[in-house]
Length: 129
Image (cartoon, rainbow, N blue to C red; front, side, top):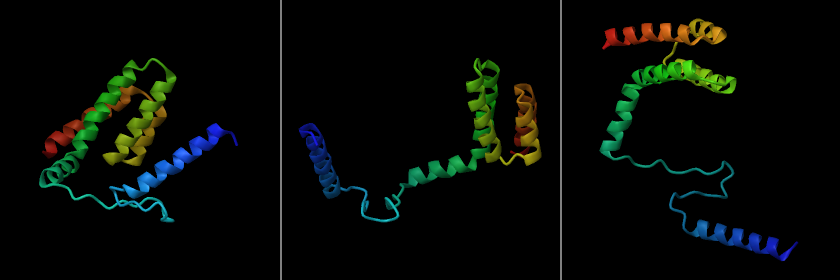
């Protein structure tokens, strides 16, 4: 082992010792399950922000789908379009689109088909509020 390798190894061991001593998250590196951090206590403000996010998650996902449709129309490479369709699938799962509808949209891979369905979903969301 070269002296450079020994120096790097010693440095890594020293860093680990420092990390073990100054462990602000109460992590146990010896734990067989991996790192288990305690859940932080959120302030009242943070709890409200989190609550509002989950209250409006469907609307957020519909907005995200609208952005994805726009990006699909503008996608210039097949790789970019593939990533966008993957994101669209995740967003549709999040708003609980029926599996048959989602499969139909993803098989065709036409942005205008997704846009038509999105328009219907947005209209239904407006009526619900």
